[in-house]
Length: 143
Image 1 (cartoon, helix red, strand yellow):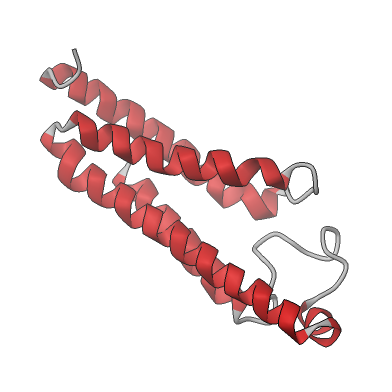
Image 2 (spheres, rainbow, N blue to C red):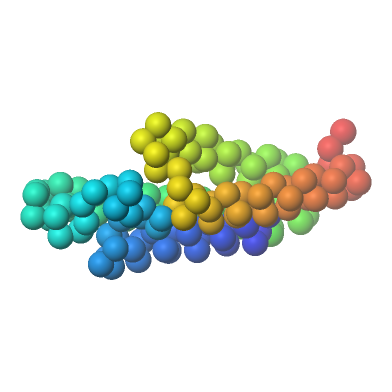
């Protein structure tokens, strides 16, 4: 769980850095999904460009912050046998993904290049959460 939380932090960093790169758009989003690039967006509307950039930065911060929370809860709470820490560490990414993922599908932003790292990290997280839950049950934290 803690390693997956750090993976979320890493994804947030990638998201942040791409905002300031020539790519500008998110990882895995290219001309097939958005038919204009950074320069065309800025030329069309500098205010829109700034607005999208500020959203990238904000989302990057929230993804990284959620990752820090998950990693800390897993490392310091779940490892001590605290069920509340496990529940909170599970709720944080589940809530984030439940809100964020559905918007990707109707607009065809669900490319493997875009969501692949999140899918992989989520799988790692689910395995870690399941193993941690078994450990909590064996410790008697789960009745």
